Image (cartoon, rainbow, N blue to C red):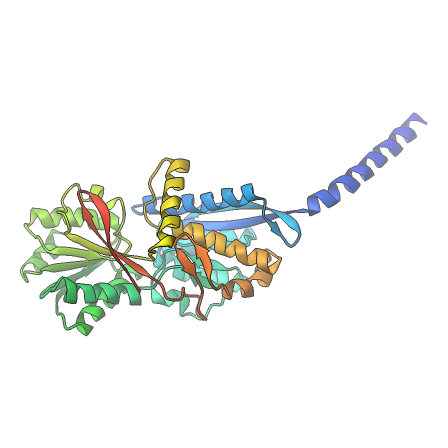
Length: 384
């Protein structure tokens, strides 16, 4: 009798537990946001910067108590390291797909974003890159691929015109690291120079892991260049600037957003003179919008005790744009919110206003030109 009574009591308790917990659990929606960037290797400082931007957005969303489709959303960040390596990039992309993420922010580099984009496309998972600028990324026809920065056509051609028309470069040398990003931006720079009536006197190549540039710099030096453009990242640009100084080369050193970082002065070990470096970062704000970006940088420093390196604000905006589409669509299911994400128009982010065109590119993307003085990055102008 006691055994039967105990059995009935246990059954009743189980039923009450289900009745109580069922609706409560149903009201919470777990949303998994993947982030991929290089957390190891020479670009690790930029990858960590991106990851912190994602973490900041996720923490704020959870603190606000977002509701999607009538359910309180709990956002979880799944961060992966691609080490700027295409093979590792596709491996972690598949890992995120297998983890049933609701969306992906990344990758940092074009060389990893492009091959990974097919994996996300095949799985129907939206991907927003905060920093990949190679035009190919959004020209593959994938409906799941987006980016929040201007591409290399805009960035490279703008720098090419600036080298010819503003700096008045007469003899311009070009170096790239043979990555999808470095080669792409260098080619567009060269086109911009040619279109502006300038002349490229030499083209040299290196790799993203090289540390000795004596041979290619010596070859360039013989042409007496007044401008040297490097398509690649700051981890290589810094040592290259040191070796240029050792060879007595005082040419203006130019590059894209990959080298336009807060870390460049340290990586060059003081080799760059004031105004010698001119670079461009995809994105840029002026007026009232600049205050939002400045406030973000202050909040970022307060939260993580580090300065923004480069792309963290774009990652932050990417997460929020993706979640805004989920909220508007009333679902975190990629198949249901993807169309809403593609129609993003006029989203006010800390990096400016975000609207996507039919390819997934940001409309009317801005560029910010910078130089360095006293080891500090200084804005020259915002251009579109």
